[in-house]
Length: 260
Image 1 (cartoon, helix red, strand yellow):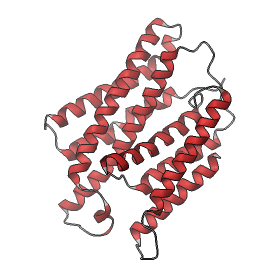
Image 2 (cartoon, rainbow, N blue to C red):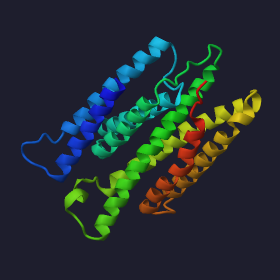
Image 3 (cartoon, rainbow, N blue to C red):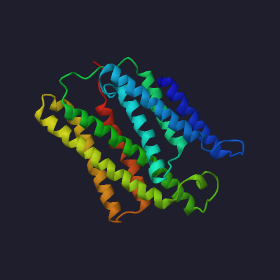
């Protein structure tokens, strides 16, 4: 099922890229978008069935977390499209989701269920962290599109792929909203993780990922505050969002569950 989902997302990316680069009247422009939605629904069904069968959340392994991140990234892009009419490039979202799902399929056999004595708040901690990383990834893609469009306007390039990107104003607004939501989710995760680290038996083990998550949170707070006070430009905010991926990815890597 994972490979089927990966194939659907791959076709979605190829379809959308082909339409955007060589549009022809015989192609369905929204075909890639509908394939992205269909793949997300199928992945949702798979994750729900897997979680119900094993009586656990689909984040009990590195493969499960990658699937959850790919699912969240695609779902967030669909949510932005349907709610705010802000469409991130479909081929970029589909390609990123394909990479997550395909990598997860190669990591199969590593899963292990949570112990029955797991603390309920730890599940909230994990869910909030995954959602925060999905929001940061979506903002990074949005920031990349912003920088491409900003550069095109500065060089007076109005055709080609630049004409398919959204305008700067909605991208800047959506970027601030995504970063603000990421701050709330990551803040919730860090607070719960910090309390558990300093009160639980495995505090020192979780300390490195807590430090990196806290650094990501502080940098995100500084970035969003500077932007909302107009202390930095939209382009600087976009570049900062891309640099923010470095500590975020390191924190995510440290958070991946080790096989037991």
